[in-house]
Image (cartoon, rainbow, N blue to C red):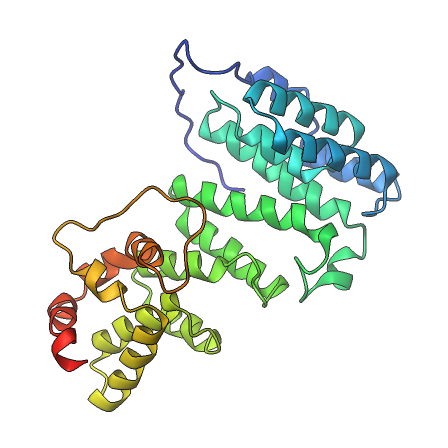
Length: 292
């Protein structure tokens, strides 16, 4: 992972106990994990790893950060290849971006090594379809978001593109984040390529973005009309949400209703900026009811 700029996070009396940097130093780094893997016959069936994962499940249910972190550290004592435990510690309060990135980098390495020497060959193309791969995929998704937040946008995009090669079925919905990031980068060529590759996805996020890209390209009216119909069928609220003077963005609940207003709000949050940046697109949307 490329180096990220460190900034000291301030603390308040209300914050939970933080993980100090020296605690990170006492844990194995990526090189140590790789050396340890060479000395053991690592596989997802490893008993210690399974016991560590059970502690992770308990940690996810914990009501406070102190208990969650304590369980994660216990899991790593059982098996340093428990990727989810590393990811939990990456959420600890008081970490600098570099420290957070170090936890996530180790999480990804641990998840990869936990699959054993032939794991990638065995699971490639169907990652996430096997429970053994999910800690790795969770960790790598988290790392991609951290890279994006730190301004390492090309690296973040590369992470998601690699993950889609491992799991083209994309159970995690990575294509939606990738689409937003490519639009942020102004990379219309790769946006079009992603939309074409995901041609079977007729959901609202991709359907409405196909309309946007057609407007940018000055598509003929017949093709644009078909895209518009597909987008409206997927979610008829998105055009209205995009043209609101003040978009009614609400806090994310972690889920939304397909075809619902909350899905439209999520679309605006992810892609609204791209419509604003496209000359004439909002005016076209305002005329949409007259054409429908």
